[in-house]
Length: 339
Image 1 (tube, helix red, strand yellow):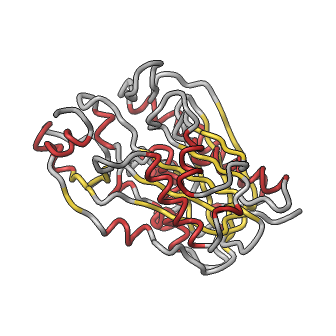
Image 2 (cartoon, one colour):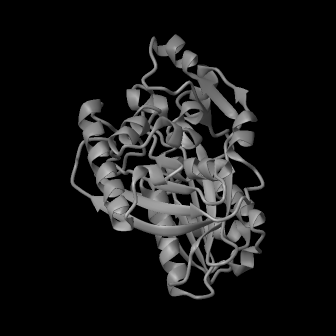
């Protein structure tokens, strides 16, 4: 079977940050476990502008011209339109051919890996196929809702092909179930809702992610210790630690990807940005386990083997360190909560 995988990747972390102390001053508390600060899109940024930026960076890292792309997939939960082809907007701005097959993945935080799997299927089915997956997100909830505290902003993109691989896809496994009540967005409401019953929600996260992860390990005949890095959905900085522990992964295996500590919950971009961070740290021969989660509920697990020491032109740590702190009033203005 033809080897397929990641040939290039790019990330973008907006420069604005807000510290947990700003929330504590405004509300008397901060509800995002383990998060010390989070990233914030600027006034002129959204999921589409960020997706275009990371797509360009991913192509530059190969390097590859945009006109070679035959498949483009966009993942986000914070789309600026409810009905409109979002991927077409990014495609045109980057210069990807109009004939490339495009798709939008927008219904859950699992969308990042959902888009990646769609891209892998395209490349496997099309011998000369070249795909790009862009995940960009900035989840939004009511400022009165504790779930909003963790929401950050960021983006990552990957070039998927069978040439010049950085990391080869070894296999994947998905698991879906019914779990209503945690993190949903009602029809005609742009804001995320949550029942804020953390044990109720965490039970679903753990069940779905461990089911997908353990099934993939069994499918590949692997053990947790066969992996040097593990990437897990990060609604905060505590949940991925819990999931990793249940799957017998260590804190050391999780360390390279735990971006939520300083960026917050990146929604559909959480796992993609965390994967880019793991790739930044990985060496040739390392294996990376990736496990996403979307409420409702479902999880994708993917296994990668790193085959070269090649890295992105802009690394996660470098973009994370380029930051400007804002106070809570400016944050409210950016979010449109006050004029």
